[in-house]
Image 1 (cartoon, rainbow, N blue to C red):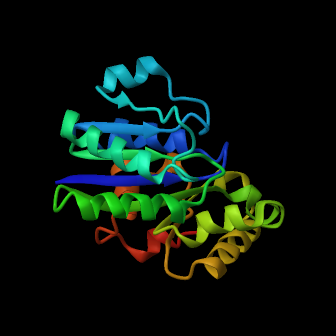
Image 2: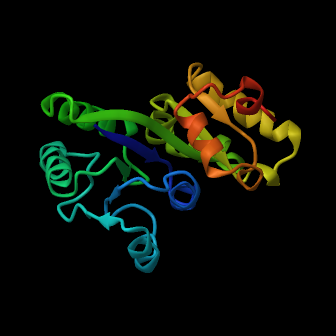
Amino acid sequence: MTKIDIFSGFLGAGKTTLIKKLIAEAYSGEKLVLIENEFGEINIDGGFLKESGIEISEMSAGCICCSLVGDFNKALKEVVAQFHPDRILIEPSGVGKLSDVIVAVERTVDECLGELKLNSYVTVADASKVKVYMKNFGEFYNNQIEAAGTIILSRTQKLSQEKLEAAAAMLREKNPDAAILTTPWDELDGKTILSAIEKVSLSDELLEKM
């Protein structure tokens, strides 16, 4: 069965950096396919991807999380049929609705009868911009927060304890059920982050560490 992990987040939040870290430290031994659409942030370096044995399938017809649910459905099935991956990483546009991507994936999972599993849906959020983004981008930003199963904060090392706690509280208000990872990434290895994403018996202390 192929696992599907969705990585959402506004431009510059750190999605690509997180994906690179997970590829290098957590997904070793797995056959991976990364699907990113061309309206996402700057493409991951092609050389890096070739070294990791990962294929990029760009959605040239447009943003997968807007109106292209049909095309996305077809593309996802083709990826599974052609590559038979252990895991598919989906990096949608930074300005799309995460809930739309989840619906599109769930529809494909239902049609593939046991071949696919929606494993996780993660939002990467710049801790220093939570307040201003909630104010300025409203529905789009809030949807990424509200629909996430896990919220991973980036650039937390730049904030004071007080500001970090305030950012986490604003996120918690929008999504009381998500795991929120606040520990600076350089203090965690990729496998620990993956455990948090997959909710694999990770201590609450780490998830809520401020």
